Structure formats: C-alpha cells, structure tokens
Image (cartoon, rainbow, N blue to C red):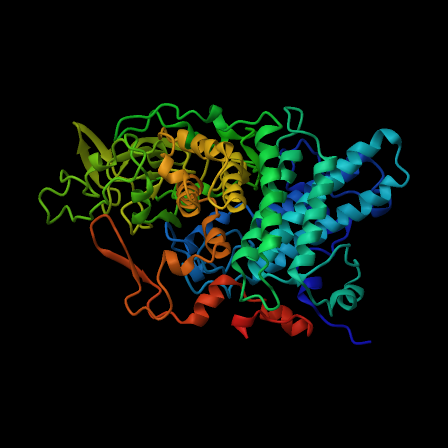
Length: 630
C-alpha cells in the first residue's frame, strides 16, 4: 500500500515518544503548576500513577497555550486595532519561532488564506489531548478507587482543551477533519491512518465539542482557592459550552453561505441560544463569582498622570492572576523560565524595554468611550495638526487636546494613551521614570509643568495613540518575560454573551437580569446604567451589547470572530465594489490607511471563512477546499 506523507501526521508535534519531545514539552510547564518534570523516563515505566497523568497533562497545556495566548493579533482584522506585522510577521522578529500565529495576516481584509501554521498547531494540540485521554482512560480500568476522581478530572481537563482546539478550528474553517484518538507513533502507520481523512461536517464536530465540555463540566471541580493556578474548573467548561452554542446559534440564524452544505435553521438557532443562555446564567449565578475587585471602578488619576489607574487596568496585569473573573486562561512563567508572555513587546514601545509596538489602537476607538455624565457618546473627536493649527491643543473636541478625554469611561484611560498621558519607561529592567506619550516625538526631551521628561519612543503608532492595556507600569521584567495569565474567557464576556443570547431568545424584550449584567460591565467604567431606550427593541439592545463588547474586550481577540458570526463586515465597513473604501485617520487628521477600496464580492467571501492549507490538500486528496478559495 502506498504511504502518504501527510502534514497532519508529520509536521505537527503529535507522534512523539515519551522519551522525546512529549516530555520536553512538558518540561516547559515547570514552576507553573508545581510539577517537576524530567526527560529520564522510560515508556514502560510511564502511565502508572496519578503523577504521571498530571505530568502528561501539563504537556498538553504547554503545547496548546501558543495557539491562544496571542489572540490579540486577530483584533487587527477589526476596526479598532492595528496589527502592523500583517502578512510579514514571518520576517519580523515579533513572533516566537514556530509560533502558531506566524505568517498570519491581521489586516481588516484579505486575511483568510494565511493561517496554515495555526491549522497545524491546533491539530498538534488535538493529538496531544487525545494521547492523554486515551492513556488515562486505560489507567482508569485498573485504578484504585481513591484515584478515580483525580484521573477523571485529568481526562476532563484534556477534553476541555480538545474542545477549545476544535472550536477555534470550526470558527475559522467550518468543516474540519476530526481525530478522536491518538494517531500511531509509527510515522508510516500514521500516514496510512490519517492520509485519507475527510472533513467532518461542522454540526458533527460541534456535537463532539459539546460532549467533551459536558464531560468536563461533570468531572471538574467547582472554582475555589484549592484549584491550582492554570487548572480548569467547572465554570471554564460551562462558559466555553455556552460560547459554542452562542456561535452555533449565530451561524444558524444568519447563515454561513461560504461553508458548502451549511443551512440556516431558525428553530435550531433558538435552541442553541437557549442552551447558551442557560450555561451563561449558571456561570453568573451559581458559583459566587464576581468581576475583578467586585466590578468597582477603583481610583483614577488626573489627566496626564498614571500613579492611580482604574481597576480595569490592573485586571490585565499579574495582579489579577487567579482572580475568579478569569474563567479560562493560560499561565506564563515570567523571568528566567523561557515561557514568559510577550505582551510588553507587542503592546509597548522602544522606551519600554526596547519593545516593538506591533499592536496599537486605531484613532476611531477613542470615540467609543462614553461620557460619565450622560452615559452616551461624546461629540466625535476632530483630528488637528498641532504644528500648523495654533489652538489644536486647546480647541474643544480636538483629538490632540488632552482635555477632550476628560470624564470618559474609566476604561478609556485604562486602555489607551493619548498625548501627554504617562507610563513608566524601562531600560535593562530598571525604571527610567515617567514617560509621556506625545505623538510623533520619538524620545524627545520635553518640559511639562517644569519637569523634564523624555517622551515615549515608538515607531509603531500611526494613529496618535498607544495601548496602556497589557503594558506593565513597573520595571523588573523584560519585554518577553511577563507572567500574566492570558484570559481566553472572562466573566465580563460571559455577562455580555448572556445578554446577547437573551436578546435573541426574547427578540428584543430582554429580561431584567440580562440588562443588569450589561450594567455591571458598564459600572466598572464608572458609567451610569443603560437608558430605557437602549434596552427596548432588538436592535437597540444589540447595539448596547456590541458597544460594551468593543470597549470591554478590545485587544483580547474577540472582535473579528464577532464580526464574522454576525455577518457584519460589510455593515461595519462598506460593501463590495466601493470605490472610495474606508480611510482610517490619526489624531492629526491625516489619512493613515485605507481599506476595502473596490473590494470584490469574492474577497468578502474569503474574509468570512479561511482557506484549508494547500499543503494539507496536496498530501490528502479527500480534503476539500472552502468555496471562496476554489
């Protein structure tokens, strides 16, 4: 029989013996979950104890984390974040070697054909989870009664992680190959085993995902201080199960015409929304969870100061590691572990440990932050060039007048910096003192209020803003040595998804608890509750929910997935064939970038579904291609 060399069997790190790469990957978790791995273990001696099973599970976490912990790049496919690496990320030194995000396109359009590595790495994660599930299931057959609960918990975590991988796969590619068991460790046998695997219809994959999450929910412990940092609890399974059903409801309601054979079904959509709402409600009500710091806004410093920042800012620093708001997350080791997160490198500038500012806020995000006084939008900011407009720094609603940002949603100051906002500069792990951001100054000496400063040095901003969110305001760690636990699902997201599901079920007559949860999210920004007009009618409440999703979840990798499941790309930008396209501006009123100019209908289709990697199809004749990419 002819043996095919398939990517799914060879190029993903799945067919590895215990003495080889499997345990080497496990070693990456040392110090995170109190494991003490070694590579000096023989296969014949393995899979004997609960410690062996736990040890292997840590390898799963290590291999899957790089498929999720930089999802903020995906926000570049939306309207409010610019990822300047774009399609050139392979040549820029901003991605870890071999990272799943490498080579991806993170522009608002034309991005669906360049995620081959993500496809392969997600399947690597799937096979690692299968490896643990299969072997621990075998252990259960002869395990002592005292070990059963812990072994089932380990299987539950592995099945949750498998579900997470498959959910991203179907969210991007629709129908995908489905592997439910460990592929053979013999390369030739593996090639035969999966060389002809066809794509499974998305509905069947979805059902398997839900089955995994139900098992995980039944076996995992409730959240408590006894659950180790980085380990999953029942609430993670419930929240993810609710999200899968919410997405399924969105697809079934609005359709997915780019996915061949997919049909709309309003009845099925309603059932999915109902199931999602039930899970989100349970997460919100049944486990005693609250938003970070009780959802209170906290303190805020004066404009141009950063000694006191709102609680929302600290939610995205290691201060919040282990907080109950973070339901599903991946831990990082920090300095000296070779497993730190790279948030500083990606979000900060040269004056902050030589960071590179690959990800920045667009000018348009500032107008989304509502006023504390009215709870509604302020007049739109006007871009003015301070070098040729004498009153640019003082004119009302000028984007370069710091006073224009007063009395806004606390999440504004927590998330972005505008001219004359401060953060702590850092060099060689030492503080250089407060560093003011002033657009287009690039490390210039300035005097502000009689004090000399060196301005924020970054060549990464073309909007007039930089991110404060995710940027540490203290020294002591390098740009790639952070120890923040990256959140995949937060409680605030669950609140907003619950409100969305209820809005779908009630057709714009939301229940009081749905409105209350949206208002809880707003309260952390110190905003007043929604007015009655914004909670009456489907479109009004949907718009209020979308508004909160934009400002609450910016930079967390949610926006582009929302736009696709809502079929909203055209309505948030322009339709096909528009000759003008859409310009994005900066705070000086300058045209920065233009998108969707004369974009064809086919390219819009390609933005709604990703291309099955051609390299996979070359090796497997049964892997069909998505319609817009044929």
